[in-house]
Image 1 (spheres, rainbow, N blue to C red):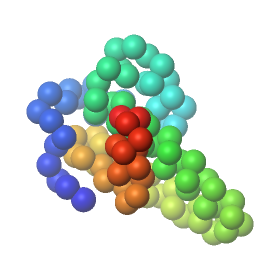
Image 2 (image 1 turned 90 degrees about the vertical axis):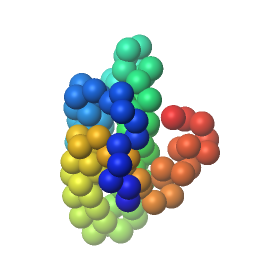
Image 3 (image 1 turned 30 degrees about the vertical axis):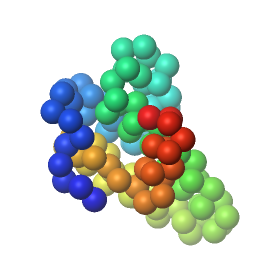
Length: 103
């Protein structure tokens, strides 16, 4: 996981929206609908990534009959990283999102 920020033009508002997207996935969806937020690369990438990560963790939790729900605690770490302006790297998911051109 990289500790360096994605770019120098990340505002505190961008960091807040990115963090909230991990904590409350509906906010990530709202960020993708808002014109001014979806045009911000940091907010858009983290919003898409948090939605995909939440879906994957939900599927894992369902398949493992709830045992995988401990993975939701990882979302807290990713939210913290996003609020610090760091590049949040989620194995497989980050590369998948970039390769699909979603963010």
